[in-house]
Length: 101
Image 1 (cartoon, helix red, strand yellow):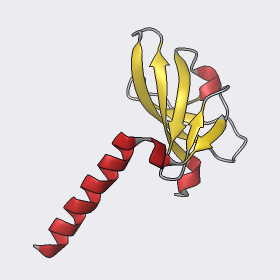
Image 2 (cartoon, helix red, strand yellow; image 1 turned 60 degrees about the horizontal axis):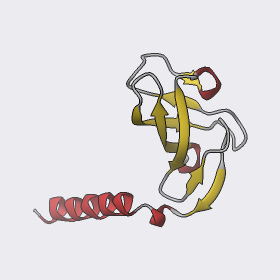
Image 3 (cartoon, one colour; image 1 turned 90 degrees about the vertical axis):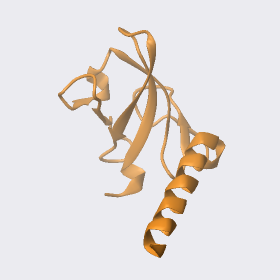
Image 4 (cartoon, one colour; image 1 turned 120 degrees about the vertical axis):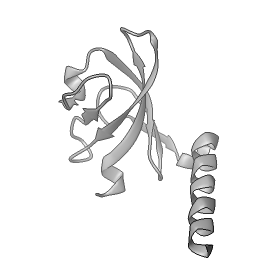
């Protein structure tokens, strides 16, 4: 799967009144993303997920602020998310330890 088509999207789950994360898939750069979410079983287009308010999305290459239900505005690289960088470092360390055993 092309990394540019997948993003982790930080949203506000309106009914729960709390922050939540979902996986979004963009068939093309301009398409409405599909939303994979553990709150509901159906995969739906973002335009049908009125229960979620997108805030920002990211993947290994970029960070986007949500301005609508589409791609949003790119505001930088994933290096702006320190927790994401920490996770990548821990995963790399575990992979190196597993191969050295």
